[in-house]
Length: 509
Image (tube, rainbow, N blue to C red):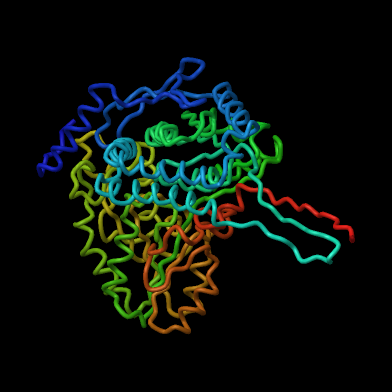
């Protein structure tokens, strides 16, 4: 193994912090149940490894059905005795706002855990993941005393109340690509509504979620309201999804596992399941786009961000044949600035893939693209193998046909497929021609075309002349096999509440 060449004093600072954190054993991988850290009941654990350089981080509790049951029982007791759900809205609001404040106060620690655990650049853990996760918790906390129930129109002899009530115990299963942010997307609305939560983070990146639980207790969240059970999907995740005392399940991950979540609901108590699943988002550039240069900058920056490990990554570039050569040339010219480097260096813009398995998956798709006849015009190989980490070059395929594997399946890596089209109808047909419908982008300076195409696209979010500039105020989710239900915005509250109607007869004097 060859160490990274330290390029700056700032990189040395983060490297020294990481070394001390690991050497001194200050990373705690134990579960969090009933307000305290606990080992798995079986005593089992697994080794958390950093994809940056392959070194061991800490032993992580390998929770199974027994631990999940203990966490669910803790959450149920907390919900039934009302220690959180029956607090005044203003009191719950203050706790969540304090929780968000503590996240920002512990920004450096949370960011370092996130980078060490899943390989993203430290600059983005600091500037994106931590502040957006804290913003989510704070935003839903602020919403607690701003959302009103309803009174239905009735005759003078009746009063009809329509009220939201918390569902009870919420199970949340989140992925490894944005561990902290995805946890916040579930926690914010679920806790705001008064529920108790049992969170199962990915076994590949559990550390920031465990730290969040500690901070929540310090903020004043009662014991048992928020529990974290790290472990493998087929053990802890399956047990949580099948548990008869979990009332609702929020899942973010692959479409394959999302199907299993629905099956687990049918096999257990018919708990409501909300899936945020995969994507194969189309980035459509017409010949009347106002700036090919800006479009190229945007698609490259959005796709290569987070090493391409984003469900909403614009991994399909659909470009009009008259501007395709210029578009591809501009993107290829940008790839040197996205070459992977040490994630602990604040100047790095692309870090490591989450583990060796994901690296092999991405390289397998690159091989498939070549075998099916696509032209690899940039990248296409593993990088920095001598570091012991999991890195791949930013990769661009031109000459991709719509039916190719790399154009149909979610890769979850920095691989762009360029598909050329002749007219608007063909672009829409290609864009809608996958099992997914998470996001899309339309680039045109003509408002009629932009509206027309946006309406025709089967996607939960359509960006026009930009990508990913939206925020917490709008819902996130997809059509088709990209899932059901929505994260973010006030619409997320629908997932974690029941509607109760109370019809009251009013007798005359």
